[in-house]
Structure formats: C-alpha cells, structure tokens
Length: 54
Image (tube, rainbow, N blue to C red; front, side, top):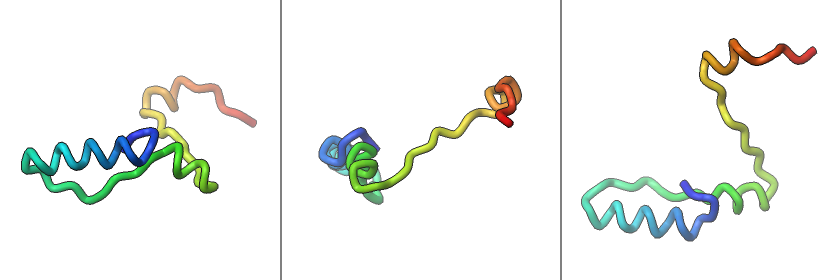
C-alpha cells in the first residue's frame, strides 16, 4: 500500500524479488480519486480518550 498505486507496485516487485509473496498493490490516492472512502481506525486507548460526538 502506498499513496499511489505505482509506488505500491514497485514496492511489491521489490518484495517479490526478495522471496516474499505479494497478493497485490493499492494506491490510496488513486482509490480516493475513483470515489472510494478512507477511514483510519483508532486504537482502544485513542477511542477511550476521544470525546463522544453527539
């Protein structure tokens, strides 16, 4: 995963050349440009410390 699919693909190629199994590559910016939604998951500590939105 990278911000652009081209870089993610290059990283996947590098890892594959070192013997790692790579399932695929995704570019977050490309995904968002095509209408996708990105959300970051909070840790349990962050969620507990965050004020509750009402």
